[in-house]
Image (tube, rainbow, N blue to C red):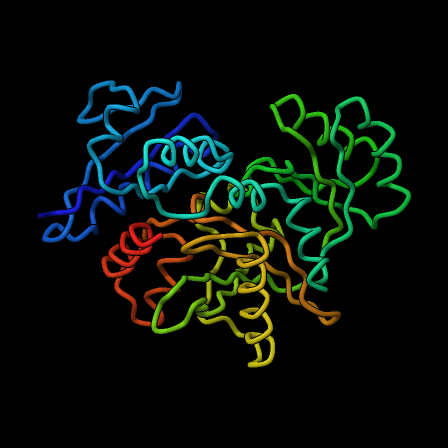
Length: 323
């Protein structure tokens, strides 16, 4: 008998389209001889659909054996979907609700990284809009300009900008609050070489298997990977990256540590900046936030070590069913 796998994609968040792409990649590559895939689409208003028709979540969830969750962004990473699945007893891929929230909040993730003894960029966390003017003054006095201004809990570089000077920094902060950011991070710009490392659990006999380090080279005109650069594919991606053996080993060690300390599950991807002063931790992408379409980083790293994407999906299903 085939296992019925529900692939949840879409959602109400800002990364709806990215979620559709990752979900489509899963649906295309899930082995048909072993699994019966159900494409469960969640529209921008939060209405669930099965086979093109609206359906109450509780009805479709009673019809599946396991769920894969390429639900990028706040919709899939706040934990509501995970709690719903747990309530109906449906096993699912990725971190549980608590772990997704730990990873999505950049301030918490940085605090955990510092607790592990890792370097992180200096930053200011602005929790309330009314504090923006005062803290923008503090930023200008203490952090070298320009600085990154980013939402504290959005992914895919959405809302991230590089700003210098009081007027520009304040405008960037206020813009994010106006767009619904739950909090704003103003972060020191670390100049170095960007790296990302994927972790997959229980692969090839290792409890935490580290994929090759990918080096990300942004276009010279921006100097960083903005949301536009991420969507357009303008950044160069080298797998494995041109890092020394010692650097690569340190990056893989740090990625495993952050996967563990942020209570991730099944797979994750961590971002770093490699500099002459050391390696700086930037953030962790929990499983729900990791892109899985053919242009995404994790599938490229899997291919580099000879892991077929269909085999990886089977592995995910087995991981979800075994926990």
